[in-house]
Image (cartoon, rainbow, N blue to C red; front, side, top):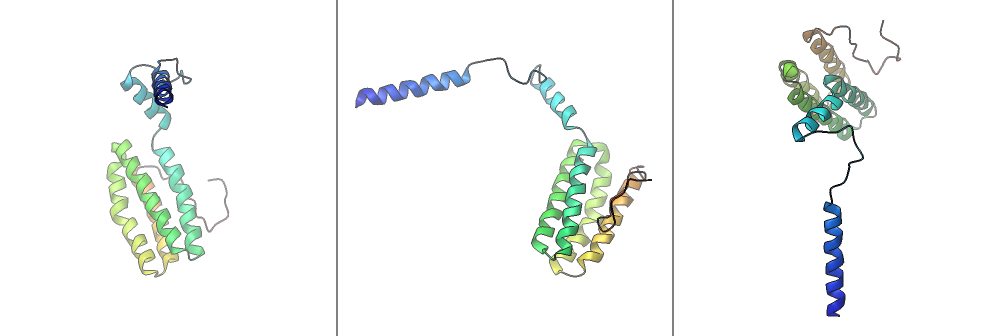
Length: 156
């Protein structure tokens, strides 16, 4: 019995050492020291456009949740919007001032409306208008904010 335990422990150690073996990574695009690899990852993760892609998806889901009167799901989506935007503010300090404005101006009324279950559809339209106001603050008025209640079409 003792030999079996020693064999198992030995095999476990061998497996552990094999796992630690240095071998050529499958991801050759990620090279260099730790700093260089982090900078490469940051470049691939990109900037605010990726944040806004997720915000757009969550914005539409928020609308659908409000329409179906699923307040819990709506609050979940609003919290996700805030979370992804907070990460965006961290990654893109030059946009932080606008993010902070949005957190103070647009999020609280939308959150309060959901919590009180009072006219969330109207609050959503105002929330959406604040999105466009933020685009204007960032000198990006040509980037439309999709209105989920309208038929999708390409921007003019």
